Amino acid sequence: MKKVMVVFPHPDDESFACGGTLAKCRDASQMTCLVCVTSGCKGRTGPFEIDCGEKLARHREQELERAAEVLGIDRLDLFRYPDGSLVQTNFDELVGRIRETIVQWKPDVVVTFPPDGVTGHPDHIVTCKATTRAVELAEEVLSAKEYPDLYYVSIPHYYDHCPDRGPQPAVPITGKVDITSYRLQKGEALRAHQSQSYSVNRAYPGVIDGDFGVIGCYEYYTLIRSGGKRVEPLPSETEIPVIEL
Ligand SMILES: [Zn+2]
Image 1 (tube, rainbow, N blue to C red):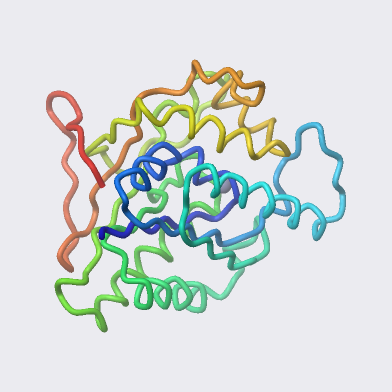
Image 2 (image 1 turned 60 degrees about the vertical axis):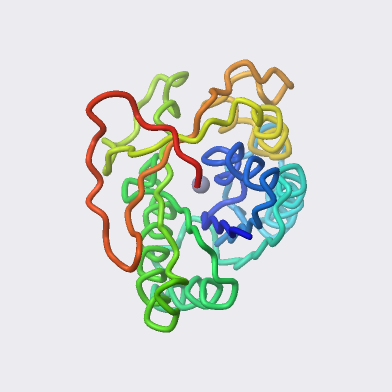
């Protein structure tokens, strides 16, 4: 049975970036694991006024648990690092925790943000670096057939509905997963993050209110490491090929 592990810094990143893919994996009887590095206590809240960081963190964990249920995620690991300050955290310790999960759970596929973090958020960028390093270090103790493929996930449509723009994409997209039949789950998972209605509305207007029309049929990936070696991603000359993770 194939195992897919995703590593993200905040509750809701998983639904934004690859909610449809996770629901699809589950439907294909693949096992899924979500590592959430912080509890999102600094997340910009919508209708909620939760000023205590601790209280907000618990609230966001509950929303994440609901989203994980919608997406059929088998294993949810909460690392509970402080939100918004991963750059100040002990990098090697964070790498060690992700590496430990990889060595213990032995995923076939690991997914995280690309080096630009999609949005340029420093927590996203640190999570990319730490996960990439963790995969490299895990390979030192895994057997060659256990080496996971590492993918970066991109959200090319993230800024379609906002006035501002994110950073230039750091890597070309090399594959897209067809999530046409899983748009409903992605929408419901995004909706589980009610406290984040501000950010959900920015990228997916209407979804918080149950209108999933804006959710596209694909989620986008870059294969960056496979078989223990870095893969040099090349931009596709024609259409981005459809892949399965
Ligand atoms: Zn995030």
